[in-house]
Length: 291
Image (cartoon, rainbow, N blue to C red; front, top):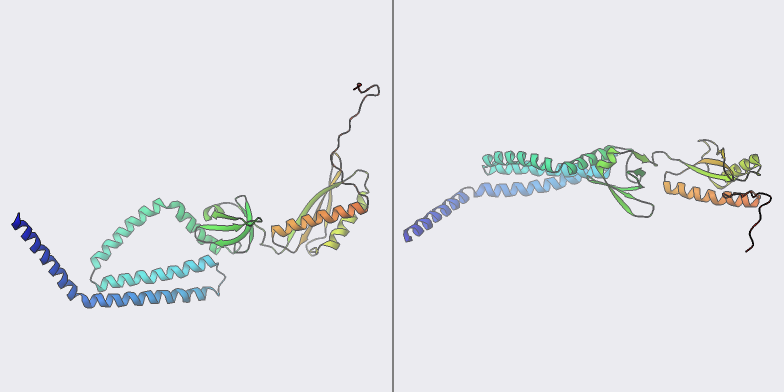
């Protein structure tokens, strides 16, 4: 037992001595590899900042600019690692790493299909000029302003200031309504007046009121006033006009203001906006029972 321990101890010492010899022999290469690694880190940071500055002059979205600058930095670091492995005479290790990376990459790709789909969709969104920061959009049942687009999520700020995080894949695969693609928006409002009203007078009164109260975009078309139907209690109309706005919130504010000014002008001219009523027709001989 004692001899076995002595033999084991001597073998361990021999192994340590060989490692020490190899370390001393390769010490110049190790120092060079450390210097190369430091230089690579510095170059990657410098090139990343330089690429970011150059991309700021382009029309690419912020998320795409960050992605490209990070990819350049990662590429430089990977090239530096390959160079360091060559300096240290670890070419066989490099082949082993590449083989393992291929197998691991396949396994990770299968496990992260959803995440990779969102990343790919984020890259596509970064190139789409019709969907960008500050746009007011409606997608997947949510409406609001785009405040961020990254490689995983599109962040929307709603009217109530709450944030909605939509996976990029859902935004790409579903319809998007962008209120900001044009410089104007149309305001649509419905209302009704009593059957005793002068319809031509009502039409002129509403149009004149809207033109005087709002900065209507005249080059689009005049204020459009359409009588729609004979309702149960009123004759209903629809009002349409354009305003200089791309925000759904501003459209809602314009609708609210239009309701107020139309109600005020109707009150001033004794025009009735009837509410649903029900008329009961009793027989002539009908009498109420004594209470």
